[in-house]
Image (tube, rainbow, N blue to C red; front, side, top):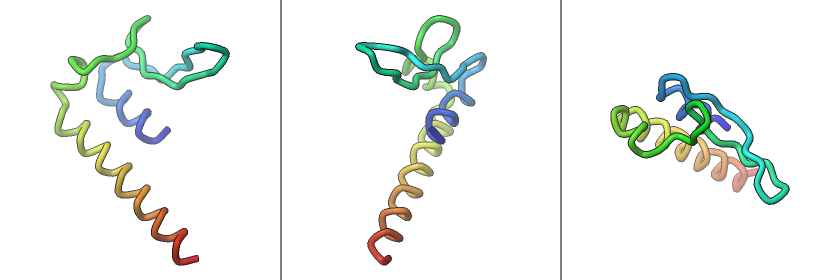
Length: 69
């Protein structure tokens, strides 16, 4: 969710919403009634990649901590 919220913050007017498909709720980022696209993210590509790198780093740290416990 941290990554999804970070992505939503990059696109003006974007909101995190649940998309129900095949009886399951999928968390997605929407602008109006459409999901965001790569074209929405490209103007903020450096920030987008930074958000992704942050989530990857935190995931790796969590995995490392779990292995030492």
